Image (cartoon, rainbow, N blue to C red):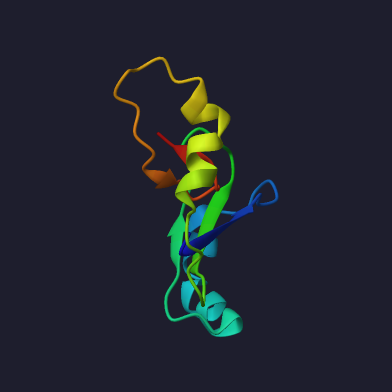
Length: 91
């Protein structure tokens, strides 16, 4: 994966735009080239801050094929595509 997502649960009463307006400060604090703020994360009551990893990690095909998501998929056309931002296999 080339990105790490941090999930932030704001205190009650904190407005989302107060956090999104801090993007440049967060970028500076993390020494990140760029960040992405997803507010809110769909289906959750958290805000996602996505930061690029300094070094991308290679996804091993063998690990994908051995995953439960691949082995238990009922489709005869199952293909290992990679991992999502949470590190879960995408098949």
